[in-house]
Length: 637
Ligand code: ME8
Image (cartoon, rainbow, N blue to C red; front, side):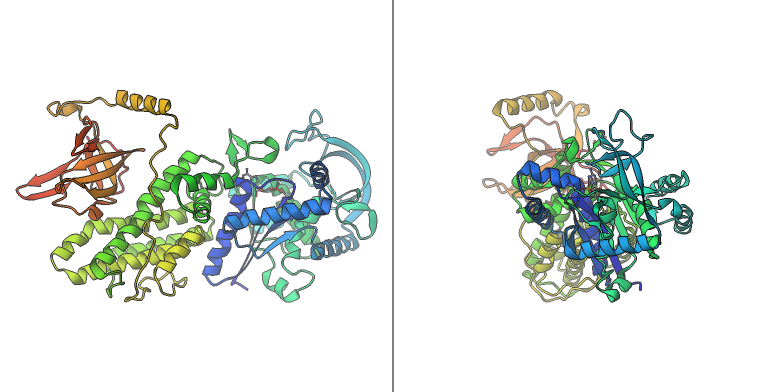
């Protein structure tokens, strides 16, 4: 059956606090699930909590709670946390769920009956934090090789899983399925791990009253990893819904980071092989979010809580928290390639917000909305696609978007969406709608606005897996049913559009908080800028700037007050161009300015530069870089 997509995240240790790393994996699964749903697949997306470990017992004790009470309250927090980020899973599985316990008992009994579980003596080390067994060879100075904490040496009678029996089968499986683990570097790592030999693994601990015990020996609790991996069978109806299981198995993708590939790419497929079941079609291993070059993790105390990021972003921008949460999840995939490590920075987030969302996307919607109201009273005009390459360009971007989504290259998918956004902004520059209106070229104007609105519809659909809340806002603005059709010209003319006036308010780069610090930074800027006289031409600092806002000067008909972005700074320029441009026409335009002209006050308004214009007789136009994608702040020389 082809039209199904079953994606999972690891089930997280319930005693930990969710951070950006957990959000990353879960949002990725949500993105994949939403995308495949959009493409008509039957989907199953599961996440959940790993609750049967020793460290849960310790954490409950620390919290002064009964263990069950503790896990119930923590599981509630984890699910609410994911809801905050608009994550729509089909099941949040908890390993204390009754159906899961039944599946684990069933699976363990089957593997035991098949002769792949036997009793023996275990001599070695155990790390409670990582819930991992380690050999003498792997442990140095009594420290866990993974988390570097002190661990205990144990000597006890244990049950073992005959992993060694699966070495050849696993090698065969990976040989025949070179895409079963991605990126390839992880595939190679796993294959070499298997080639080095697979000792049998201990899968039990002496029961301490918590966890799932062996159905055939109640004195032993099942090793928490053996129990946790089985969650993927529980959620797909393995025991209680043969039809569902038949349709969904094997999983299409297990998502995780590199810390747990040994469990998922060696032990788990061997367990499935023991049961006669197929391993997952793919394990996709994404990168780590790092702080100071180290994996972000609770045990290292270096985590970033995405909820704090949402609050911060919401405060800085004035947007509500649901939309801010959308932006945070989008940013995680916009910023880095999915398989690579990344470092989180609030500054980068704010830059992306300003450039990609406020300038490019928000600005496009705002301009098109303003024009639709100005020229057509807010109603979608009846028009054709504007001539030129726009149709083929958009179709190419949609193809790249789909291809990238299918191959877990989320950054490229987002880039394809932004190519459309930037192309649309460029179309406005090219077709100059104000001139079309002036010259009574109504048919062309209708075509242009219809085309732009139809592109906004496509953008809203494509962006939905990443920013579901934002997509909903835009889709609602069309006042008509928008389905997931990614073909062009699907907008019904005649409907009134109602987009919010400003979806992503622009944020000025944060000035230093205290007055003193503020003064210092101004001084610093003044020092850096070398003012020169108008005669001393060569000293002028010409830069590309992007016009963020434009309004009429309250006291001078000739003047417009512009807020422009130059590099990372925003400045105000008062320009005598009101006769030639309406404020709306200028928003989003890239122009060339004199950046180091000594600030002056023009009719009560500070002007910190000059927009370069070409003028001849009664004509005047601003000068723009030929490539509108030229970075603002770029030197003009
Ligand atoms: O390992 N960067 O649970 P866990 C990116 N219970 N992703 C990160 C990350 C980071 N800094 N930190 C955590 C367990 N993750 C087991 C899983 S599954 C049968 C049992 C994400 O709470 C990433 O997906 O330690 C990683 O694999 C997972 O959280 C580990 O979650």
